[in-house]
Image (cartoon, rainbow, N blue to C red; front, top):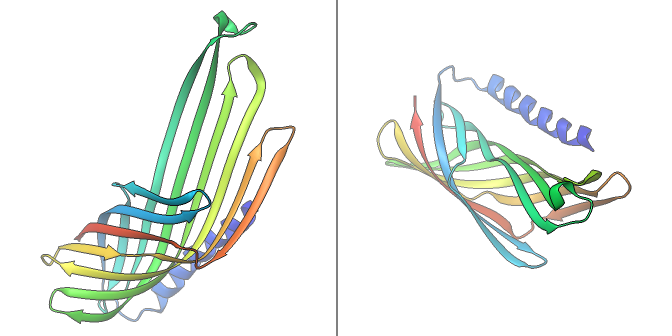
Length: 217
C-alpha cells in the first residue's frame, strides 16, 4: 500500500514537471502565501468542522496567468504523557501512557486562468492531496505494549479560485477545493492483531474554504 501512495506522489511531481516544460512562456514568477483553512466533512458521527491558521504554500506562475501550487496543509507533531494512579508492579507505583502523534499533509494543484476583470482573476484548478497520520501509544510498565494507529489518504480535487490583486505584489486568494474522489487506508492494532480498513468515496460531502494572503517576487 505504501508503494501506491509513493507512486501517486511521484506521478504528481512528474506531471508538474511535464506541464512546466510544455509551457511556452519563458518568464515565471514565484510567490509565497499562507492560508487560513475551514474544512467541512460529513462523518458517521455527524458533521465536522475544523479550523487551521497556518498552511504555507508556494506558487509558480507564467505570463498567461496559469500557475502551479504546492501547499503544506498539515504539519503537526505532539508527545502527550498521561499519568495514572497506583498500579501494582509499575515503576514507583505509577503507570504512564505515552502518545506520540505525527500528522502531515501536502496538496498540489495546477490552476488555469479562465477570466479576469480589473484586479480580479478567476481560476479553475485540479489537484491531488496526500496525507499521513501516525499515532503510537506505549505504557511505562509494559515494554511489549504498542498500539499503532496509521492512516493514509489520497484525494483528487476540483478547485474554483478567485484572486484579488491588492497591489502588484500583494494579493488575496480565496479558493474552495471540492473533493471529487477520496481513498482512505487505515491500520490499527499491535504486533498481535491488526485491523485494516479501505474506503473509497466519489464526491463525498467534503470541501475546504481557503483564505490566503500572498506575496509575489
